[in-house]
Image 1 (tube, rainbow, N blue to C red):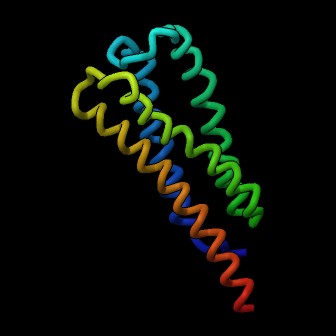
Image 2 (image 1 turned 90 degrees about the vertical axis):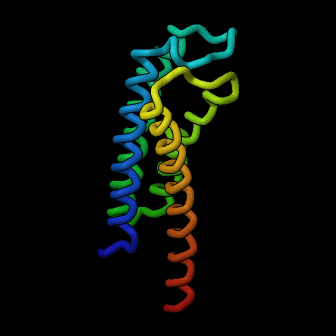
Image 3 (image 1 turned 180 degrees about the vertical axis):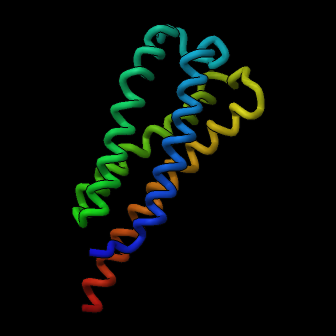
Length: 136
């Protein structure tokens, strides 16, 4: 079964995995360069990165696999959950501005763009499926 949008989804997920891998790795290694609320320790943030990035990435990859197999609603749910990996990076700016070189700033925004692209894809996919069902 040829599922519309599979190539686009593959590009979005791949871009997100690469961007978030770079960003989260840098965040982990250079934690002191990223502002945090005083109620959250650097160690807590690092632990969250070690647990949540792989978990959310696995959910995203599962979403991609489900999509390619035509299990669209489960795929969309996984992709929306995975989008949080990218969208949450904007939270850095809620407590200050990271003291990082410009190229690490780029990963904050590419993470967010990938998260938004996943939302756009999920909505496009749902609308496309409904339109195709109505036309049939």
